[in-house]
Image 1 (cartoon, rainbow, N blue to C red):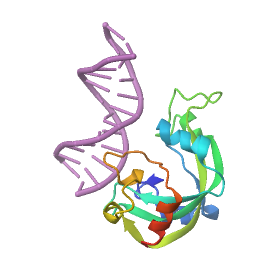
Image 2 (cartoon, rainbow, N blue to C red):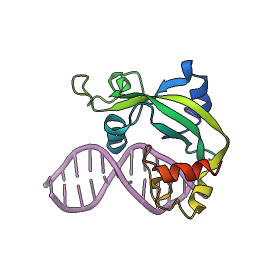
Image 3 (cartoon, helix red, strand yellow):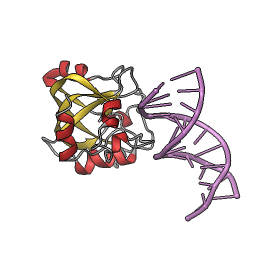
Image 4 (cartoon, chains in turn orange, green, cyan):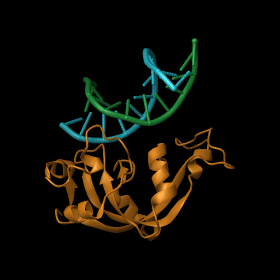
Length: 147
DNA sequence: GCCAACGTTGGC
DNA sequence: GCCAACGTTGGC
């Protein structure tokens, strides 16, 4: 899961009450579907820092609550407000995540791109813009080995 | 700040 | 349903 560290970083998550927070503001249907339909409580997730001096994977969190409506879509005062999302038929969903640990270093995108066995990973593919994307077991373990 | 690569919107 | 225009993402 990607986040711009200026807006919300892994340190922010660690400092949150109970190390937990909701992953609000996702306004992309593919990413929404993953949160609504696929992510299960306890699933481990990489926390990726995007749009920053050193883009890369900063650490690990886990799903603390499965998909439920993103209430920021209903709130006119937030920048995530979407008048087309009806509380009776919510358009946007989010999950809660819980801090697990921070890596000893950020694993840079450049290294992920260079790794010969990570070529299939969504993150390193050209033009990828999804903010949430799947990682399989093999990729997960390779990345853990790069810390 | 640039710009490629997307996703979304809306006229037709 | 097509597709041009537009807005956004995010690496560099």
